Amino acid sequence: MTNSKSTLWVQRRTTAFYVIAFITLMVIGNGCHARRGGFVRRNESMFLTRGHPDKFRFNPDSTVGIKYGTYPGLFGEEIKPFGFFEDGRSMRRSYLIYIKPDSFYVNDAVPYDDFVYNYRVGPSFTVSLSEDPTMWGRAVEYISQGSGRPVEIASDNLIESENSRDSVSIGYVVSKIIDKDRVAYQISASSHSHSFNEKSAVRKLGFYMITGHHY
Image (tube, rainbow, N blue to C red):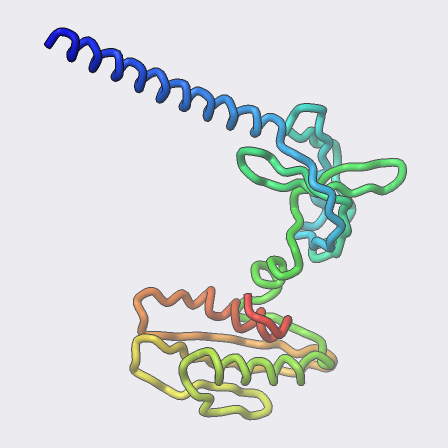
């Protein structure tokens, strides 16, 4: 009986030791990863989400950027960084830009699709007159194929879904006003679903109108 208790005690101590060792290694590993971060070389277009974003430098073995001025870029401007530094813990990315004789990082940039969805479209947005025929056709296509309701009205300046009382489909109303060489769109969406998100529905339609693919 005594030997059984002794054996059980040893097993429990051993198990506790391995558990503590595992947790310790995980904490140390996460801490080192957060400190190191990592640079990834990738040459792809990004778009500024803020005009005149802050410039940063990173010291060796540090994920804390040192601010030292601003980059004279405009909101929506396309940049082509040489890659990005990613914080190992927060996963936040800082994009490396090289303009002789200076090289620096900026945080306020996203890929094209994210820029269009989050900053370019919404309940109202404008495009050039030359873009309107394509985008207007995409709006009809998106609503008729993806909303769950047929298009009831599709005129030169108004697209409207058929009314419905079901709890799944989405109703859209899209209108436009032409002012010289610009076209202003207005989009609204509605549904009887409790989980419906009008902001998301409007942005997804606007995104499709501009890009021709789904977000």
